[in-house]
Length: 447
Image 1 (cartoon, rainbow, N blue to C red):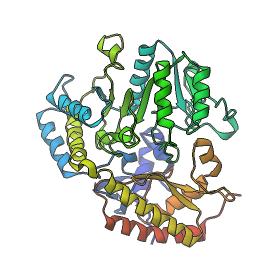
Image 2: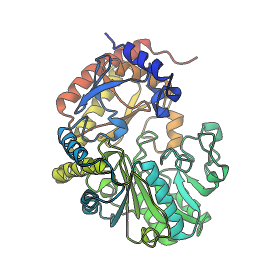
Image 3: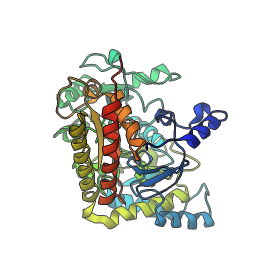
């Protein structure tokens, strides 16, 4: 029988009486039929308050590369908690972690810590503007760089307000944003190298940095076309711009050197979040000594009461050591499992007449659901995704999967964690088979 969620429903109703909208992050409201409440997890498995058991591919929005509640991490956090939770001062742990990042990422000559990747994005933009004396940041449609005013410009523009292909609109999905913020950005379409060059030429001498998700994971899961990273690096070098690689999701998932090692490029500044803290509120800005010059001189302010919190540092040191211990074997293991899961989901779609087309490198991927009549083939950018992906139908299938104990992110992203094994993929596909059959028999397109 499909799962039911009466205790989660009751807790959500209780939460709404004290927490604005009943949740502490707006995206959590998207979960249907109700935002879930969990009690515990172990590796890639998770249990909610109704004692429903899940194979988890949401994994804390991708932060839990090491799975739920890894014993080693729990031990080091507990040990540190007994020594102290916060000093607003230095500890040897912060050197331990920064030295590991230096060892793992060739472009990480220096590091600074924050509590969230959203903070790191703001620090990177400030540093780039100070470094160049320019105000504009070039960014790509559909890319997400945190929830702050500057992070969401151009993230989810509605189709009727895209602007033309040459000059994508600079819009913000939230009210309350200072209008002038929008004027600090130049928008470009992802995976169109010629368009990138034209826009860079048009604004030459005005752009401080080019920022991007190396794999567009916040809108579908779209890898860079061959030559894109080289083109960004070339333009940055030509015009004195900083290359900012937002590896909040890809960092350490794609290997010790992150996506820039996987795709062979060298960034000036790298934004690290999620996996660097293994589920603790921890993030880092890494980069070249030249890019950090204005912090070194004191001309750029970078601060935070909880920066380099020892509890988070202990978790990060443990997490990075897991990646270092895997050596060249990572990310091959999670990539193999992810590709097997993608193949299994594709086969279930074919067997049930469901137009599901999983897309991505395997270690992370997106469940693309084609609209009726949509063309086949890889999705290349944000606009292509909006035109071809059937979001309502995916939401229906996602709920069927959830009610059979298979959990993916609401927008369609699936992540593989290091504790996933073949048996977890087998069980997930067994449960998914039931979900696909139920979806196929009950789905009705909106009128």
